[in-house]
Length: 401
Image (cartoon, rainbow, N blue to C red; front, top):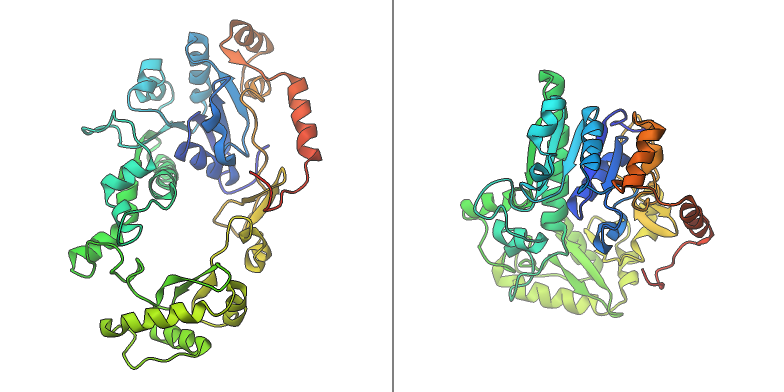
C-alpha cells in the first residue's frame, strides 16, 4: 500500500478523527509517508466520510484497554510523527500525551490538530469549521452583502487546519534534522483560518479594504470580478482585474464603456451590461467563445463535470478510485510520478499484518485480539469487499454518491 514519494521513509501514526486530521494524513501518505490510521472498531459514520481515509492501512484498537494503549506507545517508539486529533487533555488522560511519548522517543513530532488550540478560554469548547471561521474573521469575508455564507467547510477545516498541520509537521521534521529533537506542533483551526486571510487584514489596516461584504475588489463588489448567470441557468466566473484582461472581456462580449474600468460611477452600467450579455447564450457557448483568450472567464463546473474538463484530464488531476473520481495529491515533484490513491481500508482491515510488520510477534497479536484490545476485520469480509470494489464500474454524474 505504500506510495513512492518525497516523504518515503517517514513513519506516521494517525489517531483516528474526522475532518482535518484525516485529510492531512491522506496528503502525507500520498506524498510517500508510511502512515497508519488507528481507529476504533466502530468509529461512527463521519469517520469514513469523503474518502479521506484512503491510501493507508487501518488498525483497530480499543484504547480503553491498557494493552491497546501500550501498543500505540510501542508503535510510537519508532515513529517520526504522531497526529493527535482530539481535544486538549484527551491524549494525556489515556497515557498517550506528549510527555508520555516524547520521554520514550525524544525524536517524535507530536502533531496536535484542534479547533481552538491547546490553550486559551475556548480550548475545551466544541466547534466546527463554521465556528472557527466565524471567530477568526474569515467567515465575515465570504458570502453576499446580505449575509455571511460558509464556502462549505474549507476555510478552517482544510485551509486553516489540515494544510497548516502539514506545514507544521514538515517544519518540525526539518528542525529535527538540525537539532535531533522532536517537539509538539499545536495546529489550531482558528489560528490557521486567521492566517489564511492575512492579506485582507493587511488591506483593511491600510484602508484598502472595507469591513463589509460585496463592496471590495475580490468579494463581488467589482463587476469585472464576479459570477454571471447564462441563458441555460449555468454560470460563468469573470476575473478580468487587469486593464488588458478587461479590454479582452469587453471585446469578446462586444460591449464598451465610457467610464474607466475602476471608476465606481460606471460600475452599475458594467454590471447590468455583463449580466444582460451573459444571459444571451448558454454557459458552454460562452466557454467556447472565451477559449484561448486572456479575458479570465471560465465556466463554473459542478462536481460531476470538473473531472472531465480537458485541462484537468490532460494533467491527470483526478483518479478513478472504486468508480469515484477523486483528486490526486498536490503538488507535483519532478523526481516522482503523481500517485494514484488507493481505496479506503475498513477499521481493523490491517491490524494483524501491520502489527506483525512492526515488531509484534504472532502470539502478542493473538493476545491483543483475544482480549478485545485489538480487532481484525475477518478475511471473508475483506475478500467480499474486494470483489465488490472490482465489480463496480465508474460512477457517472447522474448517480447518487
